[in-house]
Image 1 (cartoon, helix red, strand yellow):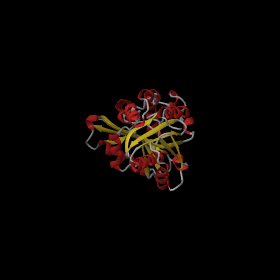
Image 2 (image 1 turned 180 degrees about the vertical axis):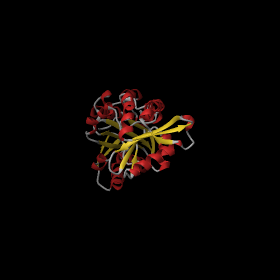
Image 3 (image 1 turned 180 degrees about the horizontal axis):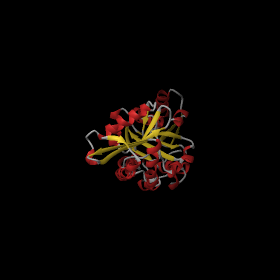
Image 4 (image 1 turned 60 degrees about the vertical axis):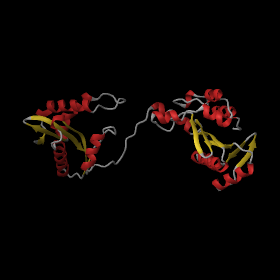
Length: 309
């Protein structure tokens, strides 16, 4: 049976809410507000919508909320004890809640659900709830990196060849613009405004030149003034990738984060660099603050690899 709660139900509803809080705990970074939530139940009985589901005279579920506008009400909490689930109790509570919202002139019911609560989200979507806004959270530590995000992005592609004109032609064809090209020792350096504006295009150019020249090509860049990246190609195949802060752009699975660490053995074999020096310089960290400034790290890597930065 579903009915409106009265003041005599407060204790039973509070017990249900405690069970709900234990089953679906709040996020760790939020203060414990259990006492406030329990006290608010009595107030909602007076000026909101509080429903109780009963079986054999015992409370097994609750739904509570209140109007938040002329056309909308918020379903703040919905809970059914585990042994009463899969019998339609939750749906009956929501249906009764919706009836009372309509009786008050409302047209829409809104609710919040934790992104991690996949079971509840699936049920709500089946009932017709759809996302209308997202509440996002980020650690202060992550946001403190934003100062570095405003820095410049720049870099160059380095081709292991002495055929400057072929590299120039191939790069110009790919970029549809004339790049800056120069040779130093056994490397041809290619730079353009287009690749500075788009790091992904720098990597794509390196892959293309490795394919067209049939040789070793490396792109080396600073991104957002905060991190250093290189991509190493051999005959068009991506053989090694490095990002000084693997999770700078967001969390990664452990395997993906590990893969963004340098492989000194491969780098040494293809570029002639000293593997020990590559290992010492091409370090990774959890934040840019744990490494040398990006410009300095960029120059150190270039020196180890025998490149003009």
